[in-house]
Length: 108
Image 1 (cartoon, rainbow, N blue to C red):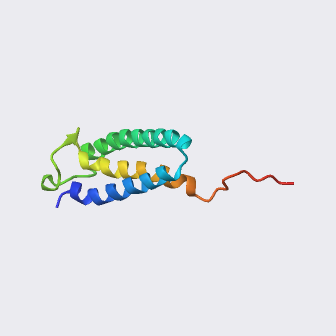
Image 2: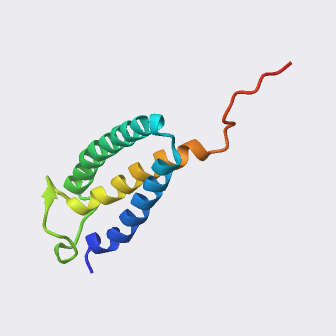
Image 3: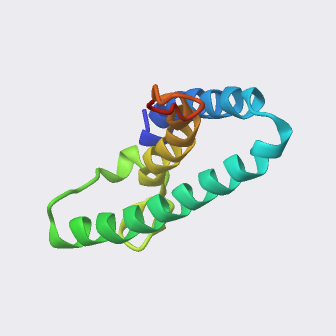
């Protein structure tokens, strides 16, 4: 079994969580939701690519070629991005539901 096949169920769950969060928003908030998701995803993918390549190049981490798809970015197998993508989908979906009050309360 390859790392990509292991990652697919997690990506599907993350996409479902993101879509549920998206549909719960009013239409005016949806654009912001997409922007935040895109920004989080961009940051995580760039950082993952940089640091995974450094860790693999230095010998801290290694991957057996039989478990990879063969697609790489530098030294990093493309499958390593699936974790960052899943996190980028789940975090914006759950962030509004962290228990903060929906409206600010005033102290008298």
